[in-house]
Every structure is written in structure tokens, then in C-alpha cells.
Length: 160
Image 1: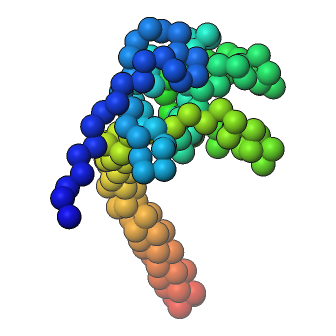
Image 2: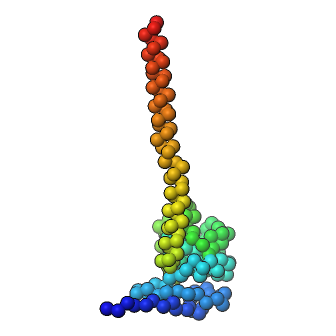
Image 3: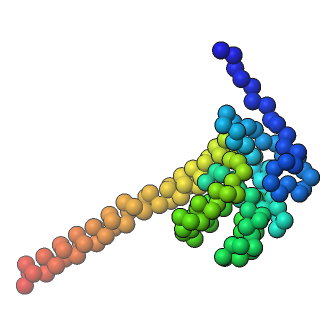
């Protein structure tokens, strides 16, 4: 069996809301899913051309901007970027999640997913190093203070 070479295919504007005239590089998967890089998605950050990433899936929400209950400004702040955290923080309903599927156009490219996860791991690890010592130091200090107070209390009662 020979190795299959996945070549980039140029999407020259046949996709939804491609008003920029910029060609986007996307890669088809076995099931026809298109993969977009972060660079492809970043250019879609205008009110007449708005894309979002939510859970590594790419959505063209241009036609939904005016319908959004929270206002279009909220969506435009996240336009052309990963809006997963903001989407989850709001606590969208099941209906909202189902509605999102009609705006689905593809997925975030695997290389960009790995870069994102590496950055998250770095941030998590740097945060863990500063908090890991406090998880044992604070209880140790509390135990020491309680022990000293107990000793002092016991000595006071024995001497009287």
C-alpha cells in the first residue's frame, strides 16, 4: 500500500460568505470535511464575514449576527478566533447548540489544534508549579500552628 499524499485544495469562493476575495487553503478529509487553518479563519472577522471556532469546529455565523439574543457585538468580539471558552461560559442551551450546526463549515486543521493544546499545556504547567507547593505548605503551616497551640495549652494546664 502506498502512502497517500494529501494536497491542499484551494477554495476560491464557493464556500459560504467568502466576500474577501482571498483564497483559502482547506484540506478535504475522507468524509468531505474541510479543514481550515487559524490563518484562514482569522481573516473572517468582519460583520459581513464572521467565522468562529467552537470546540475545534469552524462556523460561518455571518447570517446569524442580527438574530443573536446577546447582540452581534458579543459575536464580533470573538470573530475570526476560538470562541469555545466564551461559548461555554455563557451556558448555551441544547437548542442553541443544535442551531449552531446549521452554520458549520468545517474543522480546525490538526496542526493548529496541536499548537493550541501545547499552549494550554504550557499555561497549565506554569500555573501548577506556583500552586502545587501551596497545596501542601498551607496545611503544613496550619498543622504546625495547631500543634504549637496544643502544646502551649497543655503546658499551661499542667503547671496550674
